[in-house]
Image 1: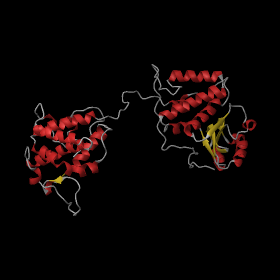
Image 2 (image 1 turned 180 degrees about the vertical axis):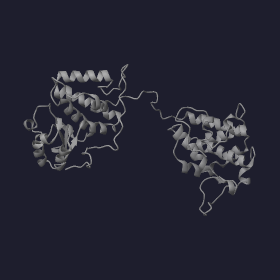
Image 3 (image 1 turned 180 degrees about the horizontal axis):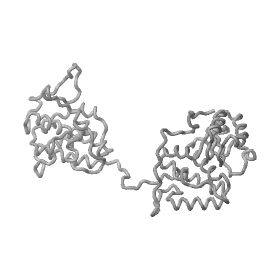
Image 4 (image 1 turned 45 degrees about the vertical axis):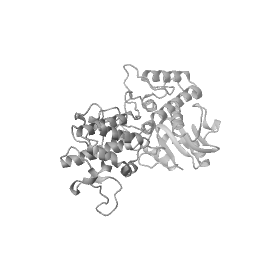
Length: 400
């Protein structure tokens, strides 16, 4: 018997879920009386008396499925005195006592739990009705308190069972639904887009300011447990008493430090990290990161020997691909903060604002407004796994 619903949410007719509920084909299309008769009213009245038992709605729908299965196997339309003809089974074949309604001949044993599971899956997993309880064991174990309802359902004509099921289905659809946002257009992933597409420092702008701003924004969003200290480029770490260009503190302890070099790092440029390495000797437990345009394998090895992690924009973009949208928005705001409040280069800030406006990147945490004629940001192929503090290729991420 199928156990999955054909769709998600909405208010589909019962016919849509016939197969999922284990009902016979054409069940929902049976002719039935316009108004409920005595048997249907009795079941509904019993349901009303026990309305606080939210699961009873599903039990009654499952009862209909069990009755249809049992009667279909016997070739009968109704069966008065069902428990006299088919006494409920009391034990499993291994001698263990049953705790749910199970009946029918040995060659066609029918379990309430099977049908109830299908009903619960349809209500919770298919229709997304959050107001329905997730309590299959308790619901099916309580069947003996609702024997009369099942007896009456088996006494009904086929049309009456369809009528009852439709009335119960209406109650199901009236439950609160978990709403999605399926009508909305997928928004640009703003920080990921900036890392990938926003050009590096241009002529007339402070050299290295874009890369340093990206470093600050990245760790501001990704490491909220540390207090970041950052200065404009050119301040000089030694002059301002910093270990790196971006330092992350917890209390009076340096926990994270990032040295930013807006260049391709080869062995010839490694001398520029000597002062950074000296600071790391004072803070052996700080996570140290070198951010640059590229690194040669020899440079990566040199940094790794000193427990410094090589980082570039490509790896940063791969990591950010795993971030949720609010986290990316936060990083964009922090990049704006760095450019506007820390670096304060009118030319760079103007170029950044213009780029964001042209490409539909929001700057205030608001959803992006797609710009006519501008394509949305391409969705990158994610890296095999997120690298929280990236290590060079072939090396595991580690801390000092």
